[in-house]
Image (tube, rainbow, N blue to C red; front, side):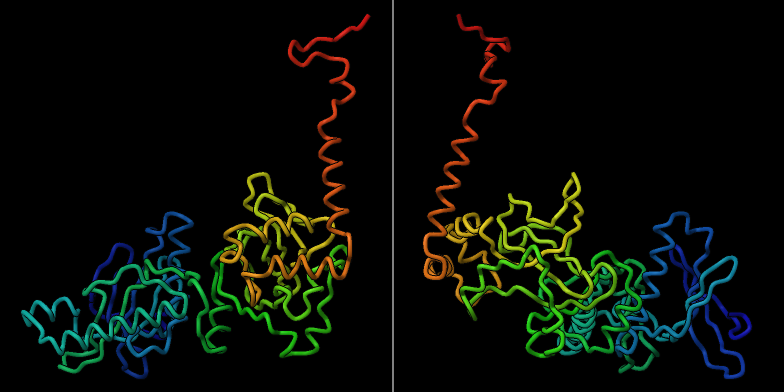
Length: 366
């Protein structure tokens, strides 16, 4: 860094870093240099915080009210972050100096700050340290641009619901993000938009029997594509529609299972604590789980909980009627087998037949 920039006077002091005026050699252009001493980074978390701060600044680069990062360097003793120079002082100091703002001027500043927050959130960034001291003016002019600074406590997060982002911005985000649950592109209409992708979507052999197909175009959504960095998708969880699902990215495809939360779907192998799973699954109904799905769909709150279908209210009746029309007697046969299985489970075992369960001793008959 010292080959390119020369450090000048001290501008400020923080918990981890010290800011200096720095001048680019050969150009004479002034910048701000935040130097973070490595001796203060005592834990792995401290190091990751610095890396994340730099990634976030690159991620937000280009916003007119976010301080622009120019470069970052590392030497034996410190990490140096070069940023544009904001020589106009803090918003806090200007408020104190003025004593008060007019309602119109206060509204302008508030609109600007809220705009920065909205932009950060739309890009999956939470600042977490918003205060007048963290807004700097470029110069001392009355109409000086205002810049948001200090992203040391900021984090990437996954917003609830869809996020609008330019594809160029998303690819930059994907290259830099290191969080466990990153943002990802999601499209359940990929097969209609890109026919070759739809033709390459292959259902695993153990999910080939798909009774939902009797609903034709009214069947719940069952396939979608995910594009994203490592860790895209969500972990094994109870879906908003009360079904157990593993939404991991497996070779670019997200496959989903419709099951009540107390049933572990075939192909899903959760860890003992339920925190992790490995699965290749798809939203399907076979004879094996038909009764379970029908029972789930007729629950009072199913019309609220079931997602991925255009008619939640009548899904149970439509599905049951379609099954009975396409496979007459199947539901009755499965119900009869379920009764027989339940009765079989109630029969005493060979051990129970020769022991007295109340006294845990053998029984003898003479």
